[in-house]
Length: 286
Image (cartoon, rainbow, N blue to C red; front, side, top):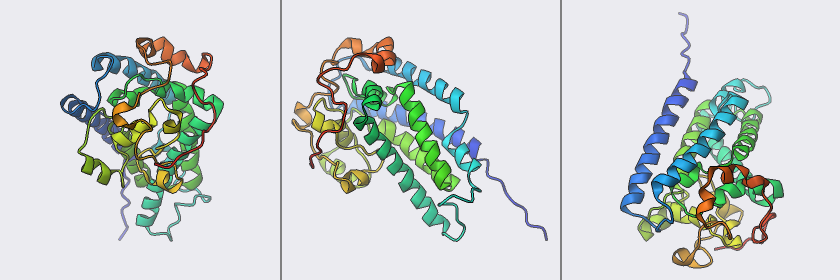
């Protein structure tokens, strides 16, 4: 009897699941913020959402037009690579799946560290940090150049390691959820936050990274999992001035002009502010 091979439509699953998760998470976090805000915003949320949403659209259109691929598509393309390290059939699938999720999250941690440590990369990444507030829309405030460079590095790692497609999809969905959840201007009970940040990056944990204080910015780089910050000693439990006394953003950019579309798209090419770092500062453990 001839065995029938079932082909999984991964591209379709990725498209539907990602955009459903995208919309559900954004709306869910937005509602959460409205009922349990952590900090008072300097600008109305609807104004911030519109400005940051436009930046995200520009970056997404450029990235899609340039690569015409997604993480899952790249994973499918290299699934049969003889040089892959995570596509060996003798390794149990569960092990390869877990290793894929951990590896891809570690890659994002390393990329994030690089954006804070290399002068040119920091000039691009400071667009994200120059947001004078911190809420769900901050996740969308990413310069197109950062999206392009991050995708290139991410695709390269998928091509080298050839992780299972299911692992790549799970890592992508986990990161998509975290991008909004981790930037939530919402509060969790102290005991919940303390427990949750042992396995997942919480809003209070990531907010520290958006402090105007340099020592705070060089901490809590994790994308979804906090374990890399614990392992590489970049974890900080509390900001230098405490959550209540912490100022969000970059010094000199806490103003309404920082929400301008032209400003956000041209900021990497503007003169460097003296207050801001262009190379890694000494890390301190929280």
